[in-house]
Amino acid sequence: MQKVIEFRGPQSEAVSEPQAAPPAMEPILAVVDSLSRTLDCIKTMCATEPIGPIRDRLETERANLVIGLFVARVAAMRLSSGEQAADVSANSNLPIARRG
Image (tube, rainbow, N blue to C red):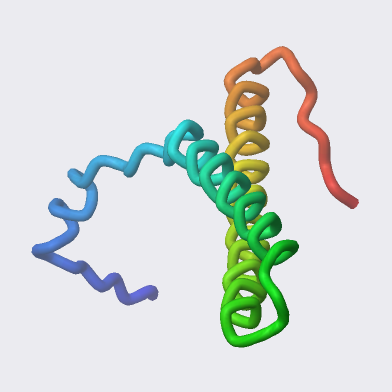
């Protein structure tokens, strides 16, 4: 015989929680745009600033912006591909592709 364990209590609370909505694309695109414009400004400032502590600081900020821009663009790509996958899965007439 199998022993059945019954959990009581918080199970009803976990079931009643609504799922979180996926993030919107517009804020991510706004971040990408802002980071791109800031990066362009820093590139311009680096071109005119002589070698020294100010230019070193600008180069550090430039590197940080490049990393942030990369992360924001990856997030935008993942979100857009997730929306496409949701659209495809909503259409039941399309065959399901399998990896293998």
